[in-house]
Length: 148
Image (cartoon, rainbow, N blue to C red; front, side, top):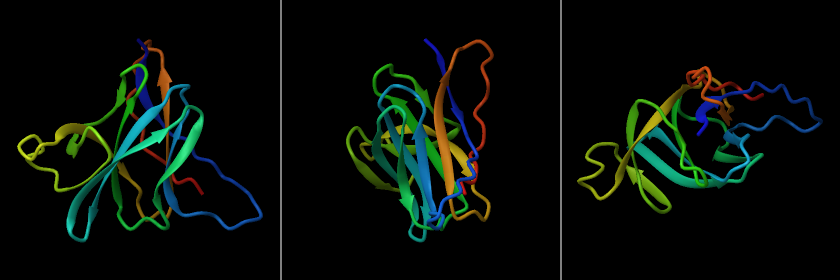
């Protein structure tokens, strides 16, 4: 089974319309992927999911200019069972969810998953591209990039 890694792409898109500000995830695999995102809101930590992203397509998870500096991402390959994860534990659920708080996940009836942190700096827009790579090399997860 191939090792799944996070890859990012910086795309300078020149169009006649103004640049869009948001947090997008693009699925560069051929499989359906489920994605969850975590972030710090005024009321505390929030995790949300699942966005279902078909192969070779993108979805916007956060619309508008980014209000947090750090965002956290977790994704699962719905067909092959692989995942894109990281060292930051947050809560997820089996079905669609919006969960306040990241502690005591199991005790509160949720599952715990490891999310990858993205430091968006002061950028208003960010894009992460999910790819799969053969296990020959085991490249580590790379940081996301500004997508403007």
